[in-house]
Amino acid sequence: MTVPAHAYDPEAARSLIVEVSERSGQNLLACYQCRRCAAGCPVGEETGYVTPDRLIRMIALGDRQAALENELVWRCVSCYTCGTRCPNDIQTARITETLKKMAKEAHLEPLRPKIADFHSAFLESGVRWGRANEMEFMGIYEVKGALRSMKKKDFKSIAEELKTQADLGLSMFKRKRMHMGLQVSAGRKEIQRLQKKASQKKR
Image 1: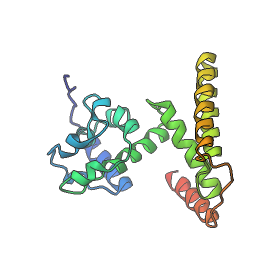
Image 2: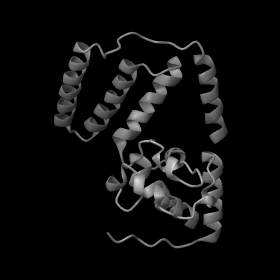
Image 3: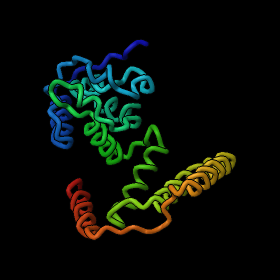
C-alpha cells in the first residue's frame, strides 16, 4: 500500500503538537519513529497504513485533517500495547481519545458511527449514575443506532440488529450474565461535577 505524503506546515505543526500533547498528557516529541508500537498494534491490519507511529507523525507535521479523520482514531481499542512497547512510554490510546474529542468539537462526522454511539451511550449512563448500567447504556446505544438507520430508511438493518441483540440478551440471561438491577455510585454527584467542569473548560 502506498502511504500518502503529508505536507509540512511549521506553524500548524507547532500548534497541533502542543494542543494534543497538553490535552493527552503525552510527550509526542519523544517519538523517534522506531515503530515498536506499530508491530504490536492489534488493529493495525484494520487501519490501513495508519499505525500509532504514523498518527504521531501526522500530528508532528501539522496535518490536522489527517490526524482527526483516520481509522486508528476510531478503531483503537485502548489496549495500551503501544505504550507498553514504547521506549519513551507514549500511550497512543490517550492520543486517540484526545483526537476523538477534538473531532467532535470540530463537528466532524465519525468514521465509525457505531463506535461513537457506544462511547456516547456509555458516558451518558456513567455520568448519570456514577457507573455504567448495562441495560440502560446498551438501550441508549441501540436507540441511537436505530435513529441513524431510520434517517436512511434502512429498516432491514434495524430488524436484524434487534434480533441479534435479543438473541444475545437471552443467551446472557440464561447464563446469569444479564444484570437487570440499577446500580448507583455514592460518588455520582462528584462525577457529574467533574464532567460539567470538563465541558465548560472546553468552551
